[in-house]
Length: 556
Image 1 (cartoon, rainbow, N blue to C red):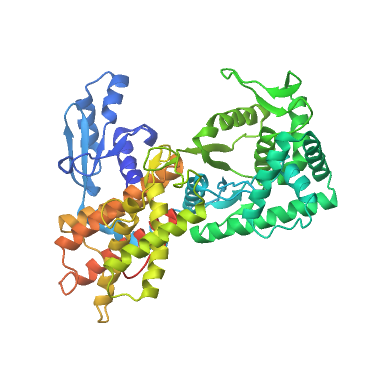
Image 2: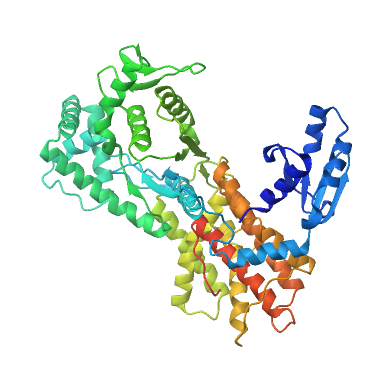
């Protein structure tokens, strides 16, 4: 299905004898202005050297009125448009019959790679990994829902000096077989201290890196053991968050590093700077360094090789990398270097930066002892807090039912609170606020969803759903908002801002609650057609929550 915006733009473009791209259409800011507003006459007036109001009136006179209840010129040349109830009802009935809920699928599914989460091997996931994991999963689900082929990549840190230190340390232990990630982290701290203080150990660690890079069996076996222990710990978090990823760590691109440097050299893009091979870019003080003065490779080399691999081998049409805003400069330089090298021809590259999670003190979120919060602890605490709240509220549920519901509500609350914050802003983490049943929270949206499920359960007689007929103002308001679901997803796909969807769902829940207040469903003459409207609302809500990575419940 075409979106309402596309349909209206087509009609305006025909009336104005122009291209649709030149039509500016926005949602009306006030109900008295109708449903949509076109402001293009203001711009056309400058080009045609005529009065904006005169041009707007000419467009209105030529406009096909079959879709519109009311069209008027307002102010200096704004065109206010109110859609017919019959048109909205027809569109909504088409949406109700569509398994994709009106979300048009592409003829050729483009391939989109979403790179997110990216923890470091031998280190526990902490609160700093929360946003990348949640935002990345949400974007992956969005593009899948829009019909694209999506590859979710976890670019873990599994290579370099840190592993040389760990391998050297473990080779000195009597029993070099740690059973868990906590032990590995303790060993890493001890190894790092030794590396900083003991020259002989530093030499051994560097030799271990060389041995690892050259495929030494013992070094490789220890490295694989380290990676496996880390993966098991990561999977605990991913299982809780219902996140799916394909691991492609830094080591995966190791065979490509030499070749990518040679390719840049052949293309005349490298400049020697204090012995290091760099790509300089106009307007930037620091270069993009692809090979160190000692001949070693670094983070820049790996990321460039990874990007080239994703374009040339994975055949990506769009690459999205989700990391904190602190890495924005690195990804600007990566993109510029890849463009110079010709790796991004016809491929869109997006770095998706995000702000940090803050504690109540306005500083980076930490435990009371001042340590960085482990992500697994934060998620478990959210579930425990949800269980305490539910135990006080839900007196008709068993302890097991409360625990099961708390698992969903706790994780949903953490995800929704994160995604409802503007991606580029910092936000303050608060269990109390995110678990509230009022306001823009997961619980508020879920409560509206449960209310719809309850209506269907209470109508126990055999019924057949009837086509929607929008008549009451609250019905029209709800129906119009449902028809804006598709364009909300398209805008989100372009801007990569998940809060657009949380705002849509919050408003949807509010509009449904107004409909529920004003329009009786059960036992009314309009029961069967209003029940169809309820079902479409429930389906859209479920789809939106799924894209956000949230689970639904039928009872609360």
